[in-house]
Length: 198
Image (cartoon, rainbow, N blue to C red; front, side, top):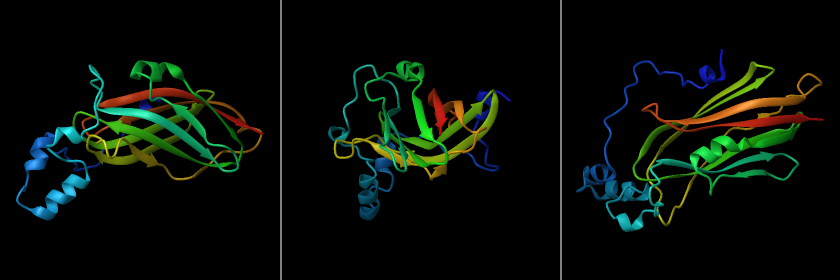
């Protein structure tokens, strides 16, 4: 199985992607319901474009990865800053993460949504050693409206993981992370390297 095969999300039987709507259409739905209007505003669903976070001219991305943080118990967090990178630069960056064997760590992603609501975002990750898949992660992240001036980014923290340990576990692993939504739109896929050390 190729690494690309490992990064195909599982289908949920019976699930049908809903009809796409613009922010304006969501904002106008049940507009007379005051409590629903407040709830939608708290999510960033508004027709007031002055509240939306400005988007760089020509940037058509809908989901923009800003930062990947690997928080390892007992050591300083490993921060990979993508905030100034284009998608092509991120894909070619190939970050290298070094973790002590047996460590407990968590992965946190900071990202921005722009232009329109992104529904059903999933994070997929495949890790291989010597060409053999040793770990696969599929983690639902949720649906997100475009970021606003008051909420300039979203964060998703994943469950704790224990790094493998032992002589056979130590060494270099190749990994690929991928962000995909309900429409099967791949927002970003990038390779990185994991080093398990003594």
